Image (cartoon, rainbow, N blue to C red; front, side, top):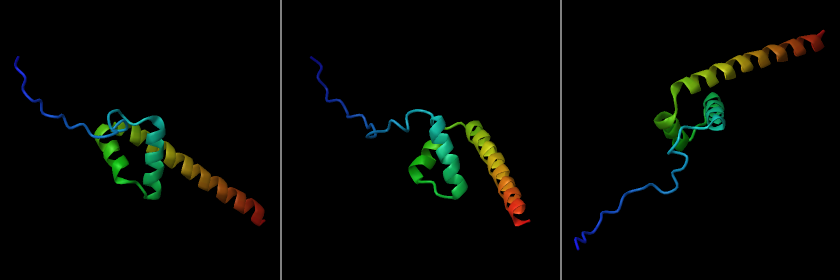
Length: 83
């Protein structure tokens, strides 16, 4: 018998979030966190290591358009009630 001790493989504990690409919900949450300026290091590393830039760019553009439309609507409502 050739019994050699096997070296333990170093598997990070509970890395289910980091083994796959970010989900749509995770992308949306990352874009919202980036817009506010509060992104934790773990999610940032996940996004850069496993995320596709196209998904974040598209989500960022959609967020920006929705935010601008929300501001425009808020201004229109404020101007309507100011008269």
